[in-house]
Length: 434
Length: 172
Image (cartoon, rainbow over all chains, first blue to last red; front, side):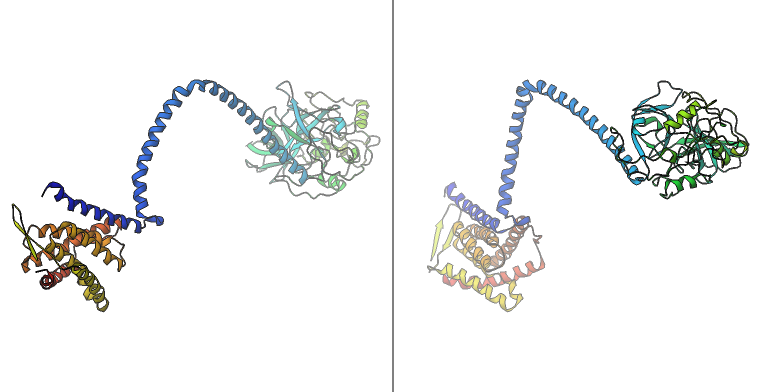
């Protein structure tokens, strides 16, 4: 027998076995019902395909990595410029988004206090020097603003309107040295006066030494200055220094004084319903609100001009007419408030600078001279600040009446109880002008 | 009829059978195997198709016919069982080739030789089946077991008498 003949049976055996293995492969199913023959085929062919793909990718990489790089630099520059534009656009959008967030917060605050007449305003500038803390807002006399109107944000008290021009107004911030806010401690309800110190922290004066003041305690407006409605959040206690008869309390304002962009100007002293810590104030009629906030007789006198009035000078104030608060306005900072909405009568706005009234709540010890009045500035301790232009003019024309002072000029505050002063002509015999 | 082939090394006898004998015997072996399994599980120890493949492989001493015979018998056996077609065909085809190769070299007429060869072929058959089971079906089949030992002894004993009977079917 030759070799071929001897190998023939072996070849035949292999062929027969392979044929039967193939037959089995068609019948046997692997995972996911895939026949064994498909599994073998895939396992046999896919490595070759992977190798071929790898080789082709390398060849293509040589082409794109070297030969095709002619236009890469140009494309790179174009893409870099595009990226720069997109970054700029992104920053603009982020700014717009942040502004939208602030405005939505402002709108929500206004909607919650729809019954309280307020004017939204945008901060357009600040004081030129570092010694005075004032800002300019884009609302003025033509928007219904008056002097000594309270300026707030949803976070807390910001300041008061100091000067009113036709289209803009200057706002004295609570951090200014000449600023003062009648306030009280939220827990103990001890009254005091929050004065600005020219720095970021405020100072609460006339707090008795024996009063227990805790760090972090909230400080609210007392409403006694007749500028800020009651129970507005002023700040929180940052630190205390014991002393007699009064302790020194440092206050950190809750409003972000250093980054104001939009503010609200309150045209009434009506309490707000959506204050963070405020005691719930009912949305009573303005007259009831005015009467009830300070426990003092309603002063029918209009508000006098703010700064530098001698306390004994009291303007004649007619009985306030309580008008229905207008509807809430949308926070459109670029437009004037809705003129169709009835603006409350000036006399309905509580008068500020009633140092006598605020002093009534102060400890018996007479405050030091030249200190800023609790009414948040100025003068006319017993005379209410006048918000109406006519009355402010009358105040200015009164003899001895101090003209509206410059921001830096401190008011002359005399802390004498109203009872000691003889009522002036036309004044309310019941007490000081509040 | 016996044909003697003189080779340089040895004399090999190739036995021939009447026409259809191989086919009929293989067919009857499969039928009897299926018939016996119906009565009792004890009859599963018998492996008549494998005995037939061994006999004709040893007798014919032709590798080609041994391979084909084993493949056909195995496929037929798969056809009437639950196993995949070709499962036993692979093993029996190999056994047919092995039996014909050994039969061409050794004297397989003695009963003791037949007993021993049958015993060994049964184990080789089981190795091939277990290997196929593990590789293709991924089943953990055993290469050796007591059942296999008992089966191989019984079938080896049966082979002695069965082969003697099938010798009568040879062409004289």
